[in-house]
Image (cartoon, one colour):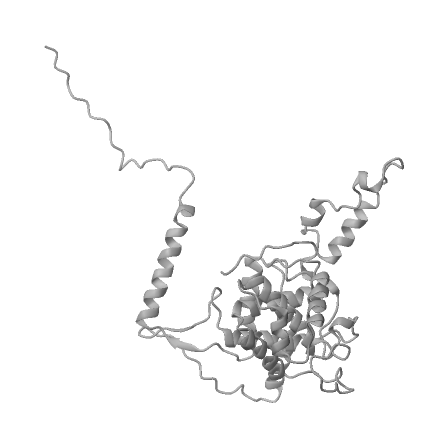
Length: 341
């Protein structure tokens, strides 16, 4: 499913606070220094035991926790359905293709090879719901992500830049420009969304009109370096965004990593969860992946992939214990008379 991203792993901020609270009860001997006792070091069991943390606050680390963007989008989906029901407006005719005995319709997007265009559209839609349904009370706004303090272009930032939510098309054009110029893959877009939600969870901030561009840029920058074998350098992004400096990109990357506590690990189960949740988001918003009839060439290709996976996992399906022989297949030894001369 691509590269194995298993780099520096650390716990979430809430778990760190719990771990430090457990260490406070320990009082070292006054004759020993802090270096000798090692009380500055966090025990490995405290860093890796993440079961105590509520999964609700850590969807980017736990495969069973629901993604934030999907839960925020459900509010708008319910409102749309309620409005259509009250106003007696049918949802409209949607041309949807259905498979039959003679024709099978499939899209070209799989969890291992997602469709690039529609994956970027789904990620942009997820970011749109993040901004639209953010916390009304407002959270802390970090300076490194503030577009007024660190503009991406030389054009003057309007005074009401933090008041108007961007449209989904505006977010899509921004993400598509970066992915097209840097030649990034669709898997990188999914990892970008994982890092974005991990940042919002760990740093306890919200994505809003004032910071969404720099947060998305930092997530794309980090995801491209972790996922792709031939990563895009920071100076390359300066050629895409003409008015940004290399020093600003380096500082953005450094602070983004610190806020993630250098936890850039994306388990395969978390990646798969985000992929299928993005497909659910697309279906709920009538953003269907393009369907095409199953051709003979693709059918042979799918059959070859299936046979390869079957051979790969054949040993795993074998029973560990040897079954007892059936009475029908039981063969008794035959005795032949001995001839004694």
